[in-house]
Image 1 (tube, rainbow, N blue to C red):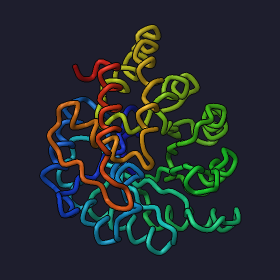
Image 2: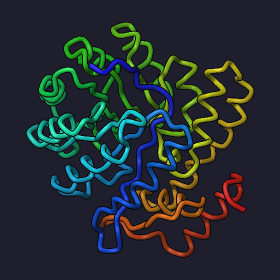
Image 3: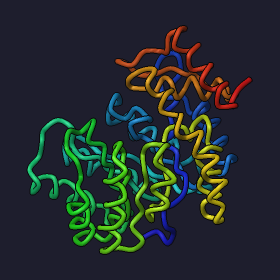
Length: 303
């Protein structure tokens, strides 16, 4: 198993596409270089914000191969490999391992509501298939329709020691604090990441590892500075930066899914990359672009 602990700020990186909706490795490289220079602690590719659910399996494999090469060992790389079926998830996970990923992120199937036994089998099959490769669970009940409870996660960690963390994408801070308490009793190093920007400080105060949130693409300084101030014992400074994070969800409300918002914000903040998105998502219209620009100016990200 990798000798590092996943922690800090790990943005769920946008996947970049050209005007024909083909993967754009040059644009992807620009975004990767920007994020690494900004000081992130790792990068998560092919998550919800990476539009994995709109891609074919060969496209997901192509992106995984490319981004691992582009990062070139500069920071840990996590690859999203979850699926609606276990066989595909295992194949994607083994592929990510073979390409040199530092870990995988696995969301639960999002079509059927699975029994606890079937959901357990899904996760344990994947975790055991990849051997000692670290696995981070992805809890997003608004999209999957099924929550991963702290007790359920703790039981998975007992069975599969390479399940080392979870991304908690739900607007329920009590769930996150309970996840920290319950699973840390099984593995004190288990890494709980919040998926919403505005939960970062509370997650850290409850023993969490950090954040995997979309603003890391266009305003990584918000989460990085909050995290670093906290680690340095500067709670006042952390609170000042957290004030920005409390406002970020206003931008996400401009569209659903908000992958177009994140890409447009990244460009407005100064990075020249294509903003194309995969259907059924559409480019952000002019009115919403104007609203986004006003928000970014309010947060001192642009003039």
